[in-house]
Length: 104
Image 1 (spheres, rainbow, N blue to C red):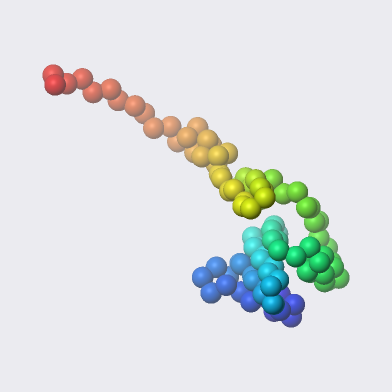
Image 2: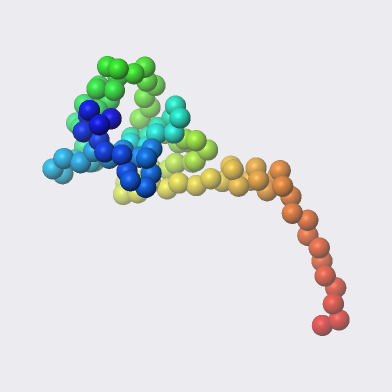
């Protein structure tokens, strides 16, 4: 990634950031999954072409889920939630409910 001009984030080493003039590309990698965000379609296309030269990739332009995270892309934001994981935890680790009867 460094050869392509990316820098690894200090706090999150699996996050790579490319910034030149007004162009940003952000890459988050987790094992064999990842997501790429950019404000430039041209820069994104060049980045994809560079990666495809050296890696065997499956590239999707419509990502709805990655590593258990649900993604929803809107005009000005990306919403992330883990509803499926939350429901699984609630199902797998039920918390009993005790009703307390008091004289109050």
